[in-house]
Amino acid sequence: MKTIVIVDDERSVRSALSNLLMSEGYTTALFACAEDLLADSAALAQAAAFIIDVRQPGMSGFELFKALTRQLDKPVGIIISGDGDENMLWYAISLGAIAFLHKPIDIDMLLEHIRREVRPG
Image (cartoon, rainbow, N blue to C red; front, top):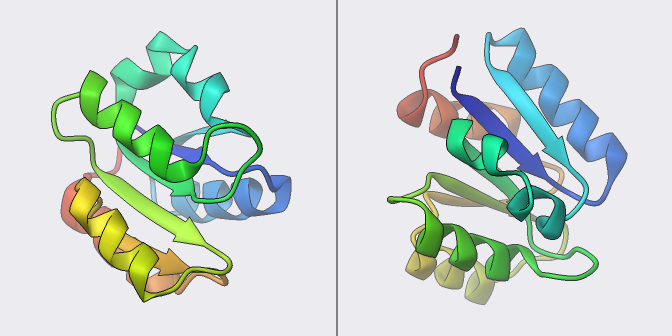
């Protein structure tokens, strides 16, 4: 089953996003850091999309997404940040992300992007 992978060092953000997506019929996998995701080959193989926070301990969200683009064929990535600016937005898009969303996340916009790219179930 295809999964939406959420990578954020804040447990409350991971839980809230997971609960929202599961209520819409999606399966989620949660990771507190980029390194944990990259070490989980099953999660990488089952991922339909990634929601990645920019600022994390260790590898940044941008570095993680770059690593994913090297390992996977056109990964679907949504980059999120609590303190992003227009430069971050354009950088995320230049890396191939489908969106850059500011925290607190606009739920309708997030779901619109997810629905466009991933079918639930």
